[in-house]
Length: 220
Image (cartoon, rainbow, N blue to C red):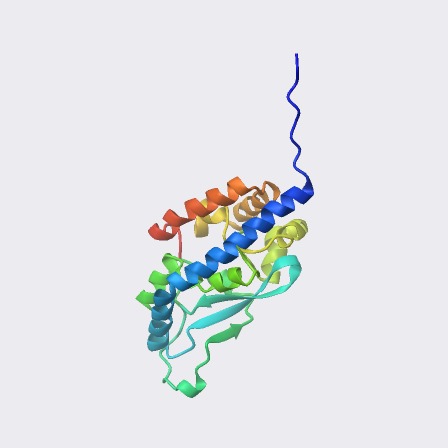
């Protein structure tokens, strides 16, 4: 009886596949930026009008291979509206705050605007990261970028497995419970994502992210 030969995929072929995925997502992110530009501009202007401050913030995170990544987001936290002065207005405020993520919760007092709360619930505040996908600093799918303190606390000895992959806008834990998950549950899902990485899983996460964003379930 004849046997069917096994088809082995070499590392070079795998690298070629992921290189094609990267090119496609960078092109796709560029198209999305163009298509969503009216929304992006509208959110930026509304944020400036409500806060009197820069529309974007950039948080220091650990990026690909341990590099520094300033994660872009629309501003959603402000104590009070500052007096508007275009001379003092910058596009982005750079923030190095390792304790900030610990304070995040469904009733975070720092999110005082209904508009900001809506943006956070439906991940509109994350859309500026499309610029970082288009530039190759991030991926559409991958472990979410964290602070160095979070990296050590959540992943411990396995932190190296996380940072050897590009950080992503969406990941496995974001479609499996999002913010209601514990740090341990998030760790398990992120490690599963990088250890079982495949194009099929990548596409599944992209597809399942859409209803998660539209419904805003378990997001704050």
